[in-house]
Image (cartoon, rainbow, N blue to C red):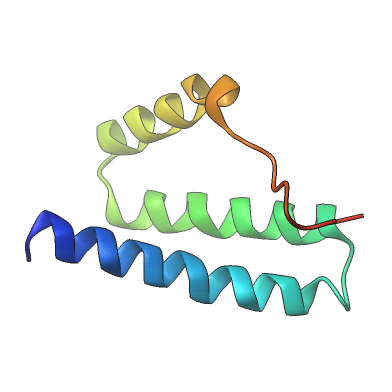
Amino acid sequence: MSSKEEDKKLQEAFDDLYRYVIIMGLKFNWQMIAATLVTIGLRIYKTVLDEEGYKRMTKTISNSYDEIEKFEDTTLH
């Protein structure tokens, strides 16, 4: 799969999950949803990566702290 195809699939996955999360926001607290998504994501990484890959991924996430942007177009509170 080409990088462009992978980018398109990644955007599609993001958009689909985002829509579902917005729907879930009608039923659950936003912090509960965020905690659940983070937990699921980390468990997936731990499942599909070896130990060194998992450590690198969590370090990358940690190092990205200042680059993460808020959702500006949606009120989540």
